[in-house]
Every structure is written in structure tokens, then in C-alpha cells.
Length: 419
Image (cartoon, rainbow, N blue to C red):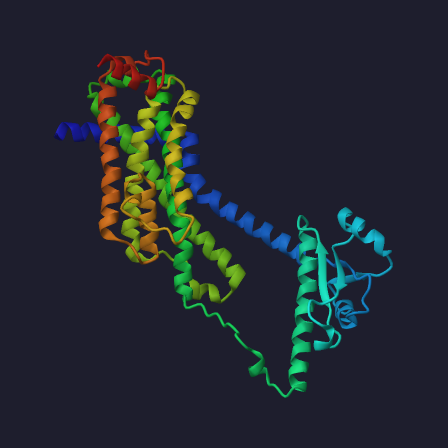
């Protein structure tokens, strides 16, 4: 055992030095998690702010062909700085101009559903706009806000004339109050983002090292050199496996750290002092669980990817063979987007997605330790199976020398037909 550990340490350090000299591994495993998502979030925030500013600055071109039924609406639109009334166009060409984008909205008046005598000067307002155009939607929204304000003023005046106060006028009014605190809102944001990005970045961090330490070695013709060092094949493969898992865990944790810092900066820019009340600091009690999930996912993705890449003879071929492992990394994206979805006994049997959901539940303060333990056990069992398959592949000369032409699935079919 002492000799095995010594060989493993030497080989692991050797693989680590080789990995740090490889530009693609450093970029995907270290630099990408640190800089990519902060840059993406900054770019998205900047683009959103720019587009929102552009939309807010649009002057809506609104046509009111006949304002006689409700002249106060025309007056209210005329005094707005963000609305320009078009009254010179003949009525029959308004629809064509709206279709061409020369107008943003058309306001027409219709007879009210009820008798006009019930409310003197009453009229039904219909707004025509183009749903496919952002500025047309915004124009319709501006007109609706003016109509709502006029309606409120008219009802208040009628109520005063009838001797009613504003309290009596608010029949069946609904006041909604959010009982969630700012701190809970921050944890909700973390619960949505951290499990997803942690899973994706662990998988991405394992991807290049898994291909490089298998197909890359074969493409560089250095496998034979490793076999002549006098160490066991098990030590060589185990050292490579631990390196791939380490790079995956490092990528995942760096990504979470960079994302937390970036979100904090964006939140401060958007919300000012309230950002400190919300806070996006990771709760300390969740850190051990997050680290455990990152390690487990690193071990799982490293085992899966190395088994799949073991049959590749070139780096490019290895990338194609490992790609199916990313389907598992996408599972949290499909299952974790809803905050109402929690870890259940059935979902606890689904690899990768189960621990991601368990981490999300823990961040939201509703985790179930029993289901989380079951999820860990399921993923650990898959790791054991993959390592057993890897051991079988190590002793197979046809696979280790690259003589076998095919993928893992063709090798599996061949082996099953022989039995």
C-alpha cells in the first residue's frame, strides 16, 4: 500500500505539471470559470440597460383619428413628453402606416357596452398596436396608463358627486404583500444559479483533461513511455483520474466564487443600498455541502469521461466520444428551473440532477438529509461502476494500445456477444 501511494503521488504531480503546461486545460479549467461568467453577466447587464434606456427614450407615435368622444384623453396624451400625436393622417391610411411601422399605436373609440346615460361622457377605448414591435407595445402601455388614470379620476369625481368616499369606492380591492424578506430573496437567487453553474462548470472542467490524459497521450505516443516506468497500470490510471476530478472540482468552485462576486457587483449597481440587505453571500452552513457536491460531481464526470475517451486515438475523436456525458450535466437545467420542484424519492435516483436539486433545496432551507444521502449514494455507485469498467479496460491490451477501432459502446457490444 505504501508503494502504491508513493507511485500515485509521483504520478499525480507529474500529471498536474503536464496539465498546467497545457494551454487548453488552463483556459477551460481555471481562466474560463474566473472570467467568462463575470464577463457574460456584465455584458448582459450592460446590454439590458442599454436596450431599456433606448426603449424608455422612444417617443411613441400615436394616432387618435376622432378624439371627440373623450377629449380629455387627447389632452392627457398631448402633454406627455414621450408621446407624439399624429392627427394629420387620413383615417383610412392609419392601418397601413401601423403595419409599415410609421405609427406605434392607433386609438379608436367605440360605443360602451352599457348605456351611456349611466355615466355621462363614457366611451370604450380600443388601442391597436403591433405585438412584434417593442416600441409599439410600449406605446400601447403608455396609452393604457393614461386611460387608467383618467378612469380613476372620473370614478373619484362621480363618487364624490354621489356622496361616497374613496374607502367605499374600493370594493373588493386586493392588497398583495410579499412576506419574503430581502435575505430570503438573495438565497432564492443563489438557489437558482449555484447548482446549475456548479454542475456545468465541473463537467466543463473535466472535459479537456479527461480527453488529454487519454486520447492526448495516445496521440502524442506517450502511453508506451508510461508503461515502461515500472509502476502499475492501476497507479497510472488512478493518478490521471484524480487529476481530472481535481480540475473539475477546481473549475466548479472557482465559477461559484466568481459568479457570487459578479452578482454582488451587478446587484449593487441596480439596487444601491438595498443590495446589502439582499446580499448574495453564500451561507456558511452550505459551504461544506457545496464542496461535497462539487467533489462528487468531479469524481462522477471524471470517471464517465475517461471511460468514454479511453477508446479515442486522437484528441478530436475523444471530444466527440465524451460529448454524451454532457447530457447528464444538462439535467439540472431541465429540472431545476422551477423553484417549486424539490428532491423526491424518484428524482433522488436520477444521477447528477439529484444532488443539484438537493443543493438547491438546502440553499432554500428545505433540504431533506435522507433524500440527499440517497442521492449521494446513487452517484457514488455510478462512480464505483465506472472505476470497475476502467479497471477492466486497463488490463485489456487491445484498448490500452489503441488497437481497438470503435467506441465504448461498440466495445461493450463486442464483449457482451463474446459472453
